[in-house]
Amino acid sequence: MTYSFQGMRQEWRRFLRRLGIPFSFLHRDELRTLYGIADTPLPAIFVEKDRELRLWIDAEAISACRSLDDLEQLIEGRVKAVED
Image (cartoon, rainbow, N blue to C red; front, side, top):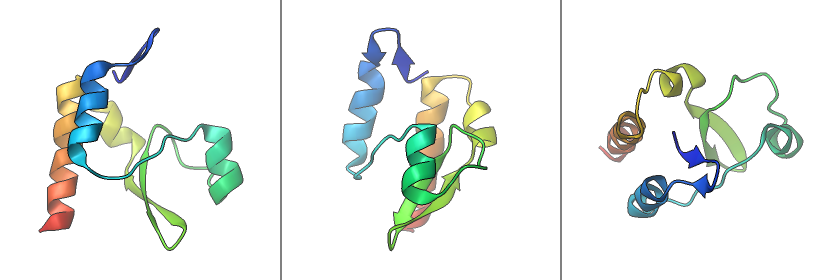
């Protein structure tokens, strides 16, 4: 959904910029090495607080998204819930 064989999709890149929230993408091995997280099903979205990652959106919720729009709405909804 977010990547094609050519790299990150432009729509996804624009969405991430529009969010205005710092983010980084980690591969499974980086997640394990940097944070000791190895047993969480991926893909997943974490938030970092006090140098500790906490699961924010799990693989099941992400997999339920059938389109990039669905994924964007899921993320925007969670962001709004945190802001309120």
